[in-house]
Image (cartoon, rainbow, N blue to C red; front, side):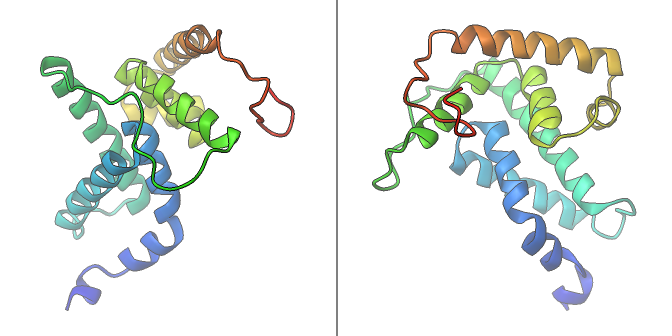
Length: 172
């Protein structure tokens, strides 16, 4: 019964699950919270399965963005205590992973809107009009928010020592 009722869900998760989880991790700042966010968005998609006539992946992504923004608003009212870093999952000390973790922590310091815009524009590689449509704002808002978000990221990362870190094999 479930397979007919949610026809296509298994394919969506099999083909796009890793990309969806990657986006969720970037939106939340860590894997565990990203998994929770993706699960909550999947639950909402399943509750609305029969009514969703548009691209279901798009619906799922939009739901994740809105849930993430709601969580940020809630935390603003009731701040959480964050660990300095995630507990290690196993022996892994490569420079690329350290850089990735540092970037995720830097993203976590941006405002919810800046984070959402940067994830949509540079992780999801959406155009400015697509990003504006996803977030329900104007293209100008996307441009200015992306500009301010990138400037803030530059400010946050200006003191980083990238001598040992490698990004695209260039060290920058």
